[in-house]
Each structure stands twice: as structure tokens, then as C-alpha cells.
Image 1: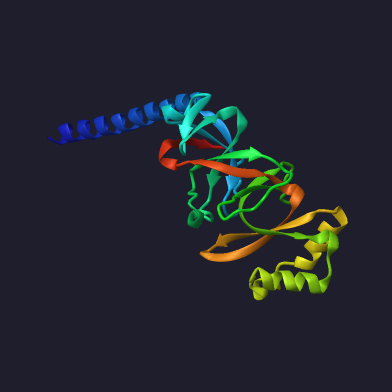
Image 2: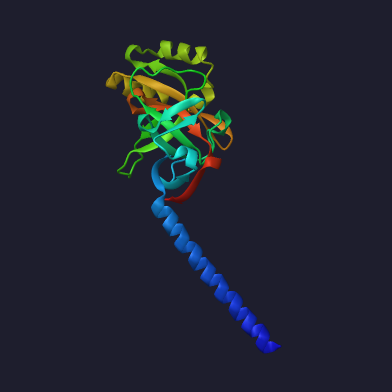
Length: 220
């Protein structure tokens, strides 16, 4: 009986490590066959830059149906969403967003979501964030009074603006001769404002492939 128990334990351990090794090899094969997409942060920027993913068959081709339209894949840049700060706008972590690259003449609507280029300190690569735009502030014709009026018109929380170094950002945009994008994000379930020069806008989210149709194999 003791010998049988010992043999059974050895068999279980052997099967566990064999199965684990087999699944590991299968995941490596999957990762090699998957496609790489850049990550866009919805929240704090993570250390990962890109994800290897598989899409459901209906979204793999050069064109497919989405949101009642025929999508030409070549007209968009694809990003995998990493984070939960855009949940209340219908974008979940793991979703794939299709972005029209356009840095000029962008208009803001109730459904607009922008991808912003950011340059974190001590990192040598452009990274990307999702932002829900509120409006542009034209820094080229700026004055203290005008900005205060703009804040009141847009009903922004002045207490939150006190800690945002906003005047520094406005002055920087004024020197650059561009508008300042004022947007909102969610951190720890609280709404915060963020500020980016207009020329940091990468493009606008046009479509979303929901995460049940996206399998993330690996983040890199």
C-alpha cells in the first residue's frame, strides 16, 4: 500500500510538470503566431510597451464589419488598452482601439476619446495614453482673466486645478504657439484633469474591438 501511494505521488508530480511544460511550449507557439500591438495606458503608464494578441477570426482580415461599417484595417493604428480609467466611457482594459492618426483640425464631440503621446522622464521612447477631452484652451491669446472665465464656462473644479501647475502648462503652450488640450481621467475612482499641448495628440479613437474578442498572449 505504501509503495502504491509513493508511485501514485510520483506519477502525479510527473504529470504536473509534463503538462506544465507542454502548456508553456504551446503558449510560446501562440505568442509567435500572434500579432504585436502597441499598448495605450488608461491610467498609470506600465512598464510594458506592447502586447502580443490573437484576434477572433472575424477581425483578422484586411477588412471586416464593425459598428455597422466595413473597416479597412490599413486606415487605422491599433492599440491594446492597458488600465481601467476609461471604463465609464465604455472602454475596458484589454480592448483593442482603432485610432485614426490625425494631429490637425481635431474637433471634440461627446464621444471623443484621444490617444496622447507622452514622454515619461528617464524613458527614451514615446508612450501613449487615452484621454477623454473636455475642450481646447487657446493659449495664443491668453490672459489670466480669460483663463479664469474659460474655467468657469467649462465648470471645472478650481480646487483640482490648484495642484496641476496649470499656468506653467499654459505658458509653455503660449511659447509653442498652440492650444492646450484639457481632458479628464479617472484615478482611484476620482476624476482628475490632465493637460497636453495640442501637438501631442496622436489621433482619435474611431472604433473599439471589445476584449472578449481579443486574447492577450503576452505583454512585453
